[in-house]
Amino acid sequence: RLNLYNAVGRTYYKAGDGYILYDGSGKLELHDATLWGPTYSSTTESCAIESAFDLTIAFYGTNSISGGKTQSSSRGIDCDGSLTLTGMGGSPVLNISSGEGLTGDNHAVYSTTVTITAGTVNASSTDVQSETTCGVSAETITVESGAVLNATAGKAFHVSAGIIGSVVNRGEINAAVLSIGTADLDYAVMGNAVLSADQDLSTLTESGMTVTFRVPTGTSLTVNEGVTVDLSKLALTDIDFTGTVINNGTILLPEGFGIENAPKGGTVTIGDKSYTW
Image (cartoon, rainbow, N blue to C red):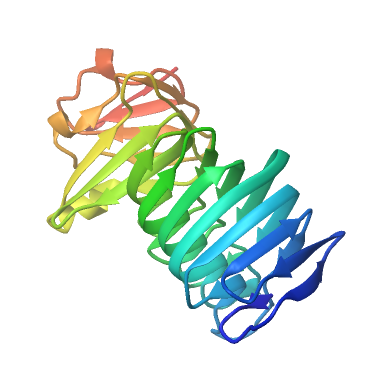
């Protein structure tokens, strides 16, 4: 674990088969590094990298960061300020996962803002027995030209998404994105997204929120085997399947939704009727 709250001066950390350098003023260098968060039997949050201020991470080669196992939340990176991720050298990769937080919210990356300027970032979260789980959670997530973000999420009580926040995409994003407004939720697919966890969006509509679910033209969504996507309480006009949907699980749609417009494959339920291909 790297806790940068009180770190000062240039510091060298051994990290698996690689190493980490910290310059004492908000910049980390990861060189083929592997880093895990601590394991707790209590409700203490587990983070692999934790910072109270703006943080820039430059990564070289292939690096892996993971939160640890705990009874609370688990996060790969937890930054109270702005987080910038920059790949350096040839084909840099940064793999970030949330670890195993059993009852809290699991986020691979949790920050005020996140900017990815270069390289490939793979952010994934594990199952959690709470409200949300996601790959990247921030007020704004920006992916610059040439950079790639792949984000997936594990199971949660209500909804999980690869990304939670507002997105500015100048590069490549493959994720399901949950954008939260004052009284509405927009769940939209970017690039080629994969859902590996149940999505209970109907519960959110019952709380008074307007929820839209969009797979726009030019994007694709794969629903993995065993996954249920509940859209049964959404308005017909708030569902868009104009992109490609590969359904290997179960999709629940509202009464009146045209079967001709429903995704083929797996199981589709419209009202009280089920269709299996």
